[in-house]
Length: 253
Length: 253
Image (cartoon, rainbow over all chains, first blue to last red; front, side, top):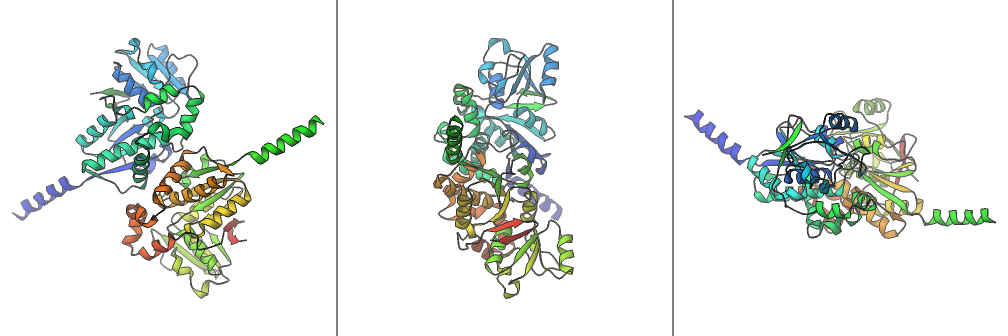
């Protein structure tokens, strides 16, 4: 009888425990976080994860993220549709980079795409031993938040950053989803980086574009004449796709 | 004549170039930053750098930061006043840790103090090849800002963080000084972490204590009954000391 009562209390407590939220600002810091029981949300707002969400919206079958241009080239030679971006520019010899607009073409439909980018694909590969890895961007903000609430696991946001440093736009997206999770009442956080991103998003949310006005990466892309891409990537919740990384490739549903 | 004119233009441009500000959120990320021409401000608000500033206010002659408890012990055996803190607690066998109140005793006057702490002394040692390393805390905020404006060099804030992760209080201090530097008009920044700290400080400045209410380290110290220390460390500009690291030890001007 006592045994049964203890089991009951244990189950009640299990149900009561809120799930945790953490934010890792760059892939370099990832080894400091325990992720084997967590869902890792990989974020590269400008532009890798935004491009991936757009690709799935346009019928791409799967995406294989690779770390180097050489790997992407090997796949290309095998007949895959291959994308490579470094420092904001499509690498010579490739048709696609990480502009979402590149993935709005009929030719991507039903294809497997191999992609390597400056920051985003590295972040995905760093996280691959986590319980689960999903792809987040402002484009699928609400879908990601709903997915995390439904899965009810601890969450670790992994910002791709810029060349291993903190960046503003990825942190703002982490803050946006973290705000939704806290508001759901199923999550809590003791993590200072999460708190910082929630505060930053509260300042930025009414006009992300202006808030990012002086951010380093927005400036970097603006110099490359990619204002259109930036405005596209800052749209919130226009996609219901939640891409999931499984056994070396990214798929939906 | 052309040569002279070019020299003149060069001098004008040199004078015109604003100095840069960067914020490094944890010692792990320090190798990503170029610091050989910069002044590095090491920050460990709760509590190592606050304790150091307090020590100099109370007549300490110099502070030798060491990375390990073993090193501190070796100095202690040689007759130095030695301080060691790990996880918020004074290490067994030492009289002092990193509570500022420990350094308000008559016995510290004129002494050389050896100190090792969980995060702060590690950060100092990581930065030692920079052009110059100084010690910052809310206690000497204005003195640090004035010093940096006078020196007119690029500035890199190095937050000690907590066990290599981002922490809120160190970032807020970086934001506080960065705000002063930007307002002086001699500095500018293209660094997203600097912008983030400036934004966070703008939200926190009217009541640092409440803003840090749920921060991880404030909670950690509160559990150790160190509320008095926290309130002390969050006082702004009560000291005019700017401790500088030189050849293995920290001194004031």
